[in-house]
Image (cartoon, rainbow, N blue to C red; front, side, top):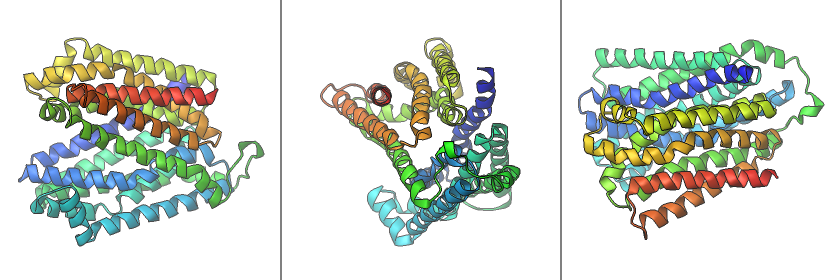
Length: 417
């Protein structure tokens, strides 16, 4: 257990720092002129970039599971670079002015002035998804070889680069806040990608001299890798759709304005405690074994107890009112959804353990089905609670989130038997 926890801690710290990244840049943009327009434009640009980036999110898990020697490394690298090219092409198409105007103004309904700022931010971020994919490919190799601290070092470097870039741009240029946020985000990711490749240099050199081990079932062709990876890419894309789905449901329940106002705070607090569970998937892929599973479940219990300690004590009021700055009426409004989500950190650890088993056995389609079941369960429960039962939107969203996750966990447990 000690070995597993020490292996996991740098990855958990990485995900926690990534959770802070968005609010941190947003806080810088919020202190610049025309903050409301810049924040809206920056939010739209990053949301669109995340959506286009979603197919490459699982490259970290893929390289952790698949790279065993020279042939598998080269096969997955070719696939990763091809996938990076596709997502870059998607960003280039989105950045074409008529295309972006259609997406921003017609589909999303942005006012023209915000649409122009969002288009500038999106254009700046064209290399961003490919840099994420490149970084995650080499981070997976580091995780595979038990070098998880180097992954955390890269994230620290990324945050430092973002901070320095943002400060220099704010003091030395007249750029809009949306542009400053996009450039800071891009600079951090580019440097982290380069650092990840540099930190993996010795490991890659060793892989290039190593043959494949027959018992690993290595995937040696692009077709093999595509058959393994495409279900994982679809999983990421489906998971990305869950957030907008909940937001849509919040607006259909009672007290929609209050629900929409507090939901980002509710989600953010929940993610702080479940981020370690997201990080545990690579741990379970790299280490495996019953002791690793027991350690993950133990950490999941601790994470849920930590959230419960905040949610059911005066610490909740401290967090909601003093840290996040919610007014008293909204803080009390957010309390119930947070308490409902107390089980979610444990379920996140459980999901990572379950997914890892299927990824290691190269049956990634099961993971996709589980995510689809989670989305369907969430949508059905949200429709019932926010519609016919007329429940408060934020409460309905929290219950539906738990219900969808339980459905996914139950399916994976059933399929495993």
